[in-house]
Image (cartoon, rainbow, N blue to C red; front, side, top):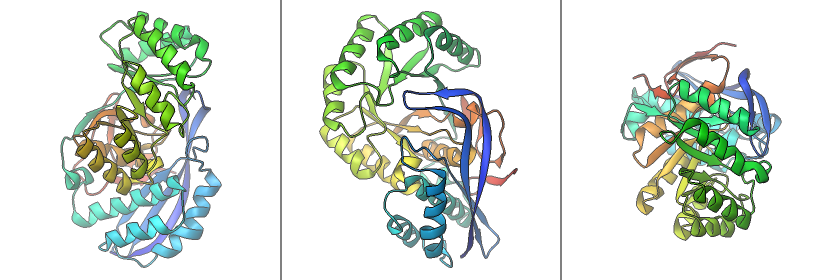
Length: 358
């Protein structure tokens, strides 16, 4: 099964409502689609969102990285020599993790097809169904309470609340939401690097004192401030999750060794794809640090890849793969089946993606 061509496309999918965090506001998913063709007729699909404020990747940089640096080195290579493909991809250029992730996902799709098995079964087959949370965008407290109640009405029992934008009212946002939804619903908060370390400790302790019963806080401080992240972890009772601080397996190991966080959020667009994500899972198993499998604002190709990984590994205990359900339409044929909070995988080889409506 040799690679004969790597083609790029684009999908534009409007969101049901604007997605707002401490870093950005987004109204639609605008992703690059990778299609790898082979001499056997098999096709592998990948996907990458341009998330410049997190990964540094733009639409132009993703296209340029693949067309100019990755594609020429992979043409003619055999999927059977999979380790070689991963080495070529890794060394093709530095950083550019989203571009690498899109190609990595398409290669793994073909690898699963070659082995005639779904990826999640190849990696361990821990489960076939996973349950995701849903994200509540940062807005005024009244709107966030309304959005939270709407999510609960759809059956979600875990909400991921965006905070960190105007920290002075973050506590009021959380009080309003907790009062609206009661205490049978799990609340996670994500500050998206929006606080300074001492500020984070003050805010989180106030939330603790108010009895908000939060499951975890994600990335309370700026990504590069590992000391600050550890300071927060050491000084609050709410478990802390590292997200933007972790791109590579090396980053993850540093967090684990320093115990700078309680959990790690694995995202394929940060790790450069499934190959490095699997390495982080192995390290997490050794250090006993549970992981979340998360996503950017992505459509169903790349999120299906994340679902396969989440379904395969028991160390992944928390799921934040709501990207496709935030979209107003689904142009992807096949792949994971999203029924609001419940996500299931078909028993089809690779990712199980059959095509894309353009």
